[in-house]
Length: 80
Image (cartoon, rainbow, N blue to C red):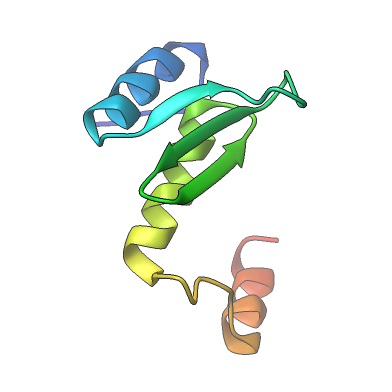
């Protein structure tokens, strides 16, 4: 399978967020941003696909999600 970020991924990402139990709405003070909330966690992003990415990062890395110096170096070397 191959998938790319495009307009046709927004609705499925929104549905996936709802299936995961998140409430999703436009941020009241930042109308261009989406806000997903569940169990005291809030995620803010430009679109549902980005929200899913942030949530996946927390699911994998936990609350200590920040990158180490080594991870930043690896990222800069390979993807920046």
